[in-house]
Length: 66
Image 1: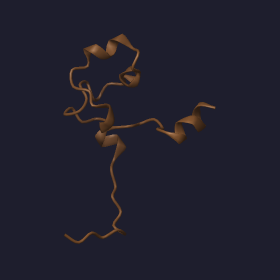
Image 2: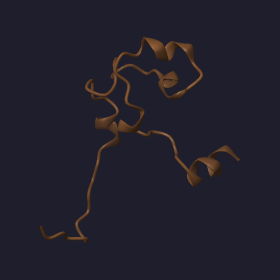
Image 3: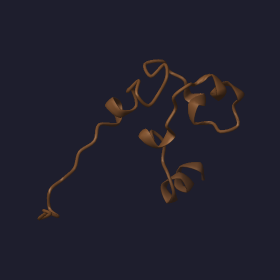
């Protein structure tokens, strides 16, 4: 298998964040779904946090919080 390292890969954050396969109530605005301490998360049946990361992660997160 030959890889083309110059081929861009594009993923839609909008689309992945609204996929019912990964998020219950995907089309509703539920920001608590990313809050690990929020008790309402137990009501989210299928929630795969890694399917969409709408907020910064890693070093970029630190920049936003400071």
